[in-house]
Image (cartoon, rainbow, N blue to C red):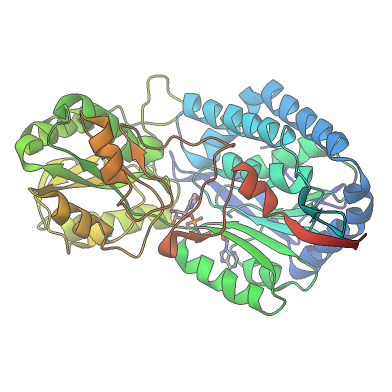
Length: 467
Ligand code: NAD
């Protein structure tokens, strides 16, 4: 077993104690992870605070150059990162490699971005400009579905704008974050990035910490609510990327087979554990049967296995709690519609769920109303556009969504009426670090990625000069 350590103030240190890290493909521990106590959390925040003046005084170009070196090192070590990611998270090795390369790409994209001053008025009487300054110490809190991608989305903009960071991964996927700390140690001054792990018990203290200036959080809506409450005491800046229940609306002029293939991918990628996975499909009457048949064929043909095995298309779900939650949901949903593929856990060690498709489900079924966060797709039928928009928008979530059809302009005009932060047409899951990403309704607050996402790591300041 590798020896993993917390990274605080430029030093690798033992945790106050340690916990098992489980490989979800076996259900067995394969490593130990150090976890911090509150005193170490305080040390990490203090280290970030004391690194802030010198780091924020560097030019954006100097900071960007270091970010580039971190990204280069991740690319060079992509093999090691990927194996660790597959072991702790479960996703197939090739997809783990894509996550690592995607994270490095994101860091490089942020290294290429700059906050820009704006002149608001310059008329001989006054010169009013707006500049942006870093906020200070950022607490970056990540979930377990894309542990490396999520940290890159936060570390990239935080560092290039001049903030320092305390990063806390999810307790079931901590090791890639600790490996990321090793990369940072070779590049950054002490204290600029600190990585502490917990046993799901330090989030409250970190988000309420008086010396933390901003919280960049990705996780569930339930936890996001707690983060917002904790931030209130000192009016911390918060970015919340939360849960979703994305609907795919498949129009009557869509090719049922070709579209089913893409919708399947949008629903089942990462074993369905994607905030922006398709979690409900609404399919026009005219093509409903053909569409369902193709989905069932794909689900039955999918190779679900240990992510380290060649040919595996889908790994296990990431942790036991999620596995148990999905099993309960499937048990409950069996009578809510017709199960045409899967419908249960796979009888073997580890946390494997059969890719599941359920057709003729009612709107009120829990499997439709809630974010399943697993390889499960309910398919609903509709006859009328107004009806399907009303039904699919009737949710407290609003992260992503997609509309699929042969007439792209018709699909795009329907997309404008979907109540979510991103709506794709004839695709799903397409993200780009230069394009803002945000949730509507209870799916989030603020923006991650893009220029707006970058700006959220800064305080805008007006300089108003009388001439
Ligand atoms: P979670 O909310 O349980 O945990 C997320 C993180 O918050 C973990 O690091 C956890 O330790 C920490 N945490 C726990 N209690 C906390 C507290 N009181 N204060 C602060 N932090 C605390 O989420 P999860 O189960 O790890 O991830 C799955 C969820 O994340 C899903 O709902 C998914 O949709 C969502 N997600 C959203 C996005 C997005 O960009 N919108 C991306 C990925 C995942």
